[in-house]
Figure 1 (cartoon, one colour):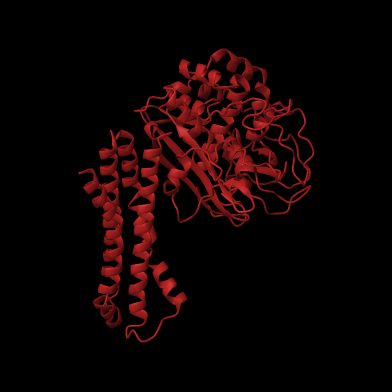
Figure 2 (tube, one colour):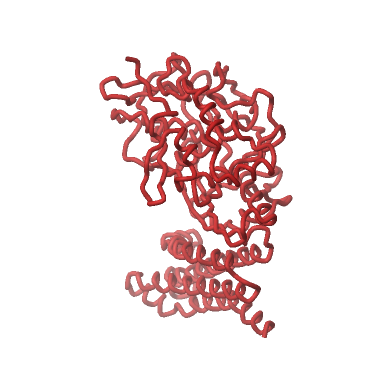
Length: 520
């Protein structure tokens, strides 16, 4: 009997129950029972994001929505209508089989211009990449179960990095890797809510112009010839299911329904001129380049850019489309102001063909913050206060290291040496890691704040917290320093460094004393 693993019927999408258990669901059940489950939780951030995008492509194909009224009609039902989805999945059922002899899902039936290699290359462990989620490498010979292989396929087509020899031309970045942005998803109380909150308005012009032949990858009879200069994007469905690689999974007949090898060749190159059209990205204006995706930074958590993510679109920035629409839904009462949604961030940091890290962050998203300039301004000021305290901490430690390197005060130490010593202290990681949880509490407090006094109290409490944290990190670093005569002399003279810190921190909190006096 020919092998078969049909994604419509087989359990392969890891979904979380309301009791916190993770259960694999088939494609059909994940859509029809989305209201019963909380979320999708893949074994890695790229897999999680890719699974959401696959389900969204199917939903857009069946339900649009062509406008906000159509979006609200689905939202009010609280679940996805079963009949259209059953009919669609039945119509294209063979195209969702990993082993279909003519149209295997997200693959080609045969490839002759590449050699088979370990299937683990699809898990981003090839070449210079670190084993970020698993201790396996591209040379691993262990077979991968079909359900895992399907998840690998999705993530690799969306996030695969370029670099390396391939045919008909060398590997190019997949869409989400090439654009260098991070995926931002608004999350609700169920998988249904999360999917539909992130469903774009799908029309001839939205989220970007489409051609009449826009369709998901599995509906195309022919793969088409890869073009080095980039394949034109036909529309949102074509984009969501972009085939950046030509892949053939090699069935391992000795280990049940599993795959040990995969043939991988370059697929469709993503065009350079796509523009700021990804609805799940946040954009910022760059000099001479227009709007570009906000990137992830290895040393900077996304919550530090939370104001930019939540504010209204302007000439200088553009938030994810789901947040813009949530603000509209708050204003018209569709989303009650006392609701708390969530914001999930998924992305990568890379240097050419090397991944340095993946990131999966979550933040609370009180609906009351959306389209409320006073609350959003408070969020921005709060982040600014944390940034100011971090800079004060860095300057005080710079002063301390200068005292260590030049204890006589008669000479100036080399700036590079001072910089290296300060960076080796790891003060930024210590400082910022202690503020992430308090910031979540601040956002929730601002969402619940009833009037200016409560909002100001929450902001004041946060400012005191960041100053206290900066002082704690400073003293812990000083306490941990080796007690050599040179260090002891520098610590004895640390009053100057600590004075710099306390003086700058007082300026951060003084504004609240002035405001309180004005209110009195």
